[in-house]
Length: 263
View (cartoon, rainbow, N blue to C red):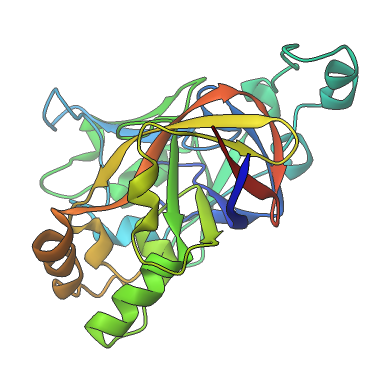
């Protein structure tokens, strides 16, 4: 097994298209990071193929900060140590939705429960009226495409250099940011079809490169748009940046864990 890099940081997004949170450790399940995108705002007025309200339509969603009311229940399964002690392949007990209530801090500073109808009211507009919006919760992560997204710090630094502007990595909304051994930008592309082991147990298979949309143009704090970012990715890298993965073996990971290539 060859060392590829280390986890630079771990991120999850309790509500789809809202602000993410950085974690020191996380549980990687078959459906994604535990607690990632458990909730989404469903829009009955939107297209059937993608019936969600997201920052593509309401960029200020990026300024809404969701957080778990009981964070101690939201990071790792409560019986993880006991399940691991039984041997490989034992699935631990996932928390129930009763253990995972989420509150959302709005840009104005008001804190509303995820099930508070006032949250839908403040998210509504003429294109997405409040009576068309509902909160959707799911046992699996409600990602756009694949369970896990990976992005390299080297790619961000190269884009910063080429564009001549600092780039907040949160623009790319990845779950796992990796400090690769290779200093080459977009080196993650080379691993499509390959398998990584992360830390002691977790294994993921890299499925494809991540097709990007205008979400990466938005500053995560101000929502100010810089169209040059997506233009750069489109013109230089076929509109793709970062990689998607599926999970082969579940387990806990933490910042700094080694990532090795399974030959």
